[in-house]
Length: 178
Image 1 (cartoon, rainbow, N blue to C red):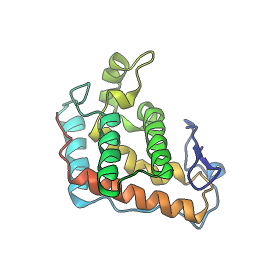
Image 2: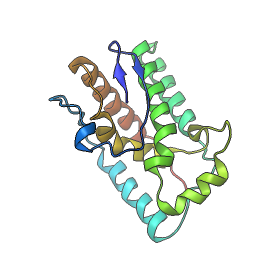
Image 3: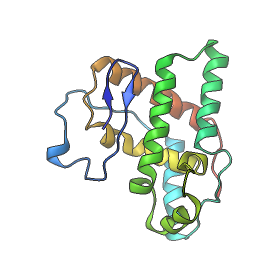
Image 4: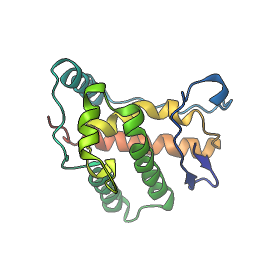
């Protein structure tokens, strides 16, 4: 569960129980909502078809991997604004943390699990191996993951704005390969 200690600081912990189970929901009028651009929705559909129907797997390790993608996003923010705020850095750390913890639990299709077990072990983090396809799957799951989190409205708005900006950056880049 993530909890906002301030508008920019999160503590992350991912549980394997059903995040939408009634006892796990935090009553909130502030639900995270953002639209995934149509090009990325198409990529998600293609990804699903490649993996589940055509039995193709993403070549691992990916280049760029999730760490690289988030670093490039940070660099683009730096170029555009001359700096990266602490809150953006925290959001990106949080995304990486959620990715590393969510990947084996909810971001893999069944036929990708053997590949995961063969590739990610010991001190290897999923974000250093997996790439855009799986990071995009995280964005689909974020609203249901964050529904359990009691966030201040201001923090929720900041997250939502940053996620939209990351998706915009994502849609301008071609990071996919099978």
